Length: 226
Image (cartoon, rainbow, N blue to C red):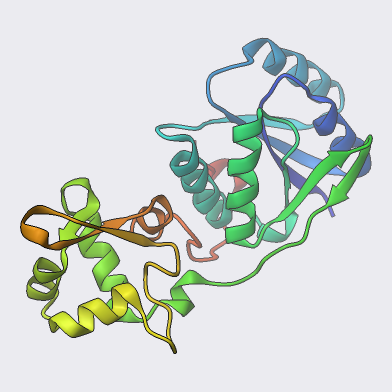
């Protein structure tokens, strides 16, 4: 089996070269924020000699949001079992974003430690299985509001839920987690003392469908983020 290595493009390419030496590689997908272009030319020259394809994928917008969007699309276009995510090859924040996206999407991740590649634990769970329909309804409504923010009262009116039910889904109780305890929303006291509910970054990603896209393998790897 040949692998597709996904790696942030950074100053140090050694972890990518190590991965290529240890895993039969079909293609390298480089996640680029627009920096380190000289390193890109170096890696392409090495990959060409090894007859390994290289595709550069630009991370657009915010780093975390952009990384999650890329991973969601990658899962639909490339055989998931062939994907190996290198979380040592980029700058610190890029590596952290890649690691978070790997865990949430259940993808295999590896890191270079003491000149050895270490396979990291894979978390496989679905936010969408954990979230009942009404919680998802609240997330999607908040996504479309200015600053992803709304009062509990407006949420109740627009989602056609009672105020106690909205409060339950947002705050949870002793037996069930709410959006706040799940890390998907926060609250603060707004004008006239009303509680305002605000989506977190993770809440926005879930509401926008950028986490755990349907697992549909494309017929061609060339479809990845063209």
